[in-house]
Image (cartoon, rainbow, N blue to C red; front, side, top):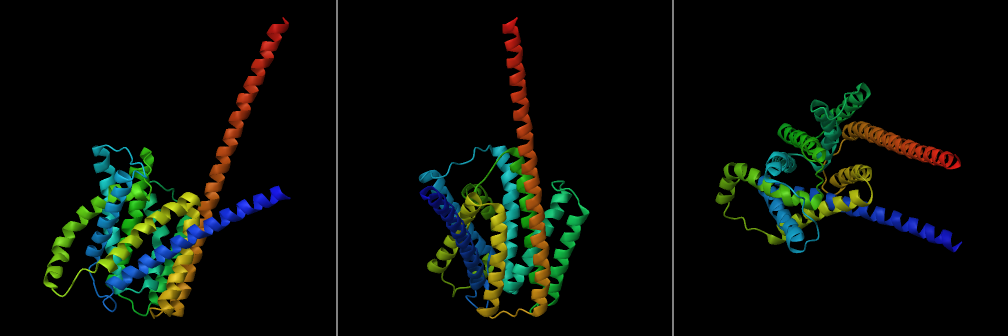
Length: 348
């Protein structure tokens, strides 16, 4: 009885920890999105400089990652040559900087709820670019699912009360660059056996992002900031905002490391619905029935896609286990045959 109770207690503890990681990730992801919207929106904090905000985030995250790796030595750096850094990390840094720049820019023109609906296109973009770079195999049923997600997002866009073409183009561009980055990570890093956790990713990639963002910042935002004499840097606002962005990376590390990537995908769906509810009830963004219907269709498509991926992973794991069992049985049979031959020799 005591033993069974101990097992139940251990299982309960794991479940509670898993839910805790999910809750922390949802809270931080939610906070960063709403905080960025608050800073960039001209009706709220009114600081519409997305490149500058992204550069502040990258500077803060790169500095903290360097302290964690070099000073406190809490995380081991990845062994990487200069050529590998230039050929693999730098292109990913360029894509990441463009993705962050465009996604933060979209908050100036679009509501939080509508941005979450447009982000439902991410599986479509990742799959399409994966097929283009031959990292995914083309399947008719999967493409049909991608079209259903796109159709749902199109309906949500049609029902958007405050539709802004430029804002939509910015967000779609952000999705395209982020999807390309995810595929490039597979091609340029994972295929070479290089695994970067969120801390080492920031350590290597954040400085690249700063360099790439500096070029458009000089021509686009620096002249405006120079002429804005009334602005004073608020260390509390930008400091807490940057800290939340860094903490979100740690939460991703915890969530994926202690649970799974699928758990993060499911948690992401919960977060999106919470953000839509928050945007409608607190920020007072308009969410129409057509919005919800379209996003509902897209949500079903994304859920089916995640389910299909999970089933494929389970089948792959089952094949691996079956192959291991066959290999072990084969070795055992060879060992027994060898022992049998040895016994016959002894008898003769």
